[in-house]
Image 1 (cartoon, rainbow, N blue to C red):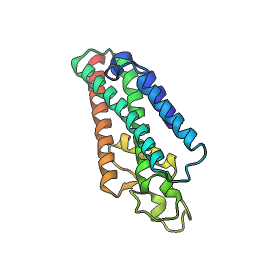
Image 2: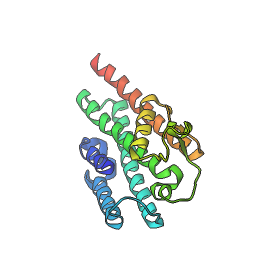
Image 3: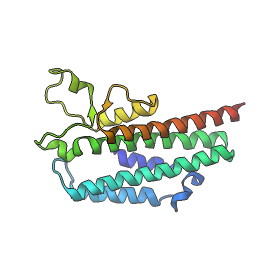
Length: 200
């Protein structure tokens, strides 16, 4: 559902923001095709580890991320050069920001402890994120994070520009959170400054 929502958000972006990726429906179409392959290969819950499925999952997330980065760069260029009107500005920035939240939620979900397949196995892997439920023994016996926990972490990181209740423990988690915060901060700063200029 998250990937489908991200693809839909990319479809509603104005043409001038996605033109760096070729035809408007190319990237969302590739995302849906990769998602379909993953669903056919593993139609139920992700309960097993597979190198091929993991690589396909990472490729899918990277594709969503690439599409969003290109759209962000295109939008920032248009904002700085003053080619975007007020309505187009708000219209384009919100889907890009929401896609940023979704894609980093997917990255965190796929990164933590080797991904969802590895988390379902019995072997213990060092966590990449420290959730509050992990710090209070007995509060949530047998608790493991689900996708919503990673999406929430992504949302709070994108709005606060820093971790809130979930702490990154590994270098990879810290780098991902820094990149997400930077993208969100730059988008919000440029959009707000341009919006103030338009409104004044």
